[in-house]
Length: 85
Image (cartoon, rainbow, N blue to C red; front, side, top):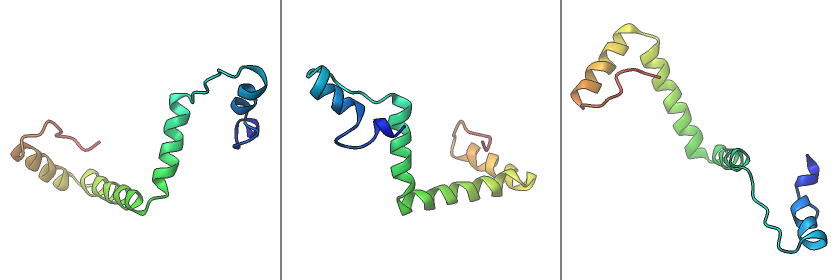
């Protein structure tokens, strides 16, 4: 899909200048979210947070004893989440 990329030759720019000068280009929501996620994954803090969440999930989901500790803690802090997802 290289025809949609680039600053000078992307399809929206060409349509604005050649065909319809009042044309407004809008990204679809999925494409916009994909661009945001790609830029977030390049940030070191986000990758550290993802690693931490994966480690917590593995800790609580692989052991019944750890899962029981999690549910006890969830009840103490009065949260709705009683299950590791």
